Length: 113
Length: 109
Image (cartoon, rainbow over the protein chains, first blue to last red):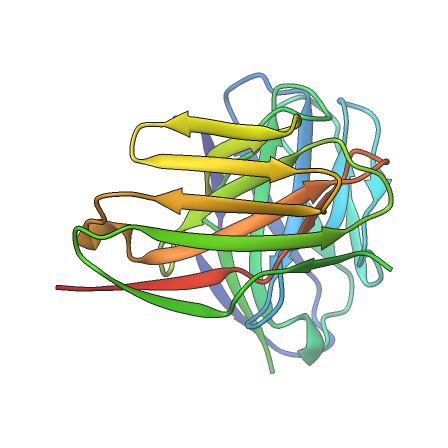
């Protein structure tokens, strides 16, 4: 693994199903983030984690949950998917929370029907 | 509310210079970032400004005026590979990034 990876690359999901998007980084970064990117809108922060064991809510957290059991992994779960959650999801990490640059994973394209 | 404004799309010619503007209104300010995003790919970091003035990095430069809530990204000697979206983002008082919708830059030969 080099940098930050996400899985799956893309997914089509029926509404009401549960889905977990995976994110793993090998840079030993303390902070991790989940964003969604929709056409015509800027990236919007869903949840973040400043360090392992802690998480926080971003701008659009409803319908999503996260956990940070260790430094490397930061999964994002949709408990019951809805069509408005159709989006491209990016995971990112930074060495520390704050003004450090963020490194982004390749993204997961999710379609909820 | 918090707001980041940048043009939706710009067109420029290969070899020329282009300036992409960004204006912002945020609750607090802890720096401004520029990222590049090629179609279908992840954003990648270009620059970070926290003090007023110009930061130069090769063909790319970024300027900040905190009193005016204004920044620009200057790209010189444009190459076809510079065709991408350029994202402006401001770190607010909670150290969260507020992102603009991005400027799609089209380079013509």
